[in-house]
Length: 282
Image (cartoon, rainbow, N blue to C red; front, top):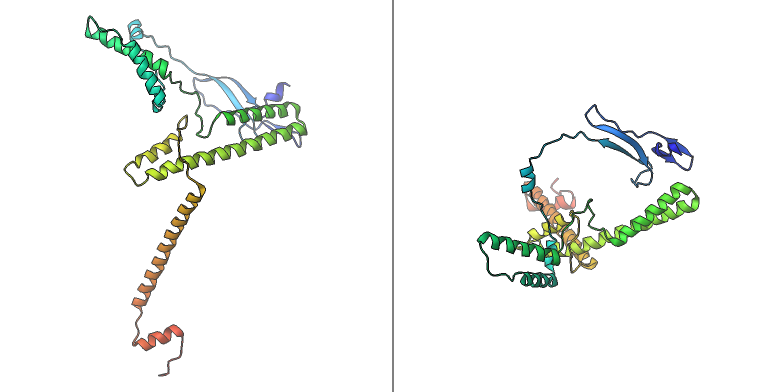
């Protein structure tokens, strides 16, 4: 059982095991504490994940006590909640309830009082924004997350039992996850295609680029009015027709240019050359 975390490649059909993946480092101040194989990690390959624990070289820096006291903590609030009217009303009500004091001894005291009220109202109505530790794809949701968890459980079961039944269950769960992800991707692109098609060519064309950039962020935006498949088909047909029109125009221009360069003595010779008839004068 000790070498089970040393083999980086295992083929269950022929019972083959090998150590063919390594971690190579150069001579630096970084020290490697441990290197092992994680069999439960899904890498999309028949090789297992090789992970190494590194102890970084840290430089101790002395911090002045006064600088440490003056350092303030930055708090981010969930400003995307302002897109909902109910949240706007809640924030206004919370702020009106807190801004009750009228007499202040100085301008600085009044400023600090207003700032504290705004922070307290924002925390109650909006909530703090916690940046996720890992980036989440635009098609990610709770349903996909539960499917992936179930697939990982089936994978761990197959690694421990190694039976045909557990292998079949893992393959089935893997196929279900792939189908669900494909459907989510297609649905998301249909939603985003509508608003991009609306903004392109207008005064708000920059909104289309904003939507494309938002697909790379941690969470998706709420998009309405998804584009339908028949409408997408009509757009593609128009694109193909325009392309065919350009091709036919280019062919006609080429024929006119070639006919212009030809030299015929008479119109009769030109007509006979088109029909490949013999010349009676000869």
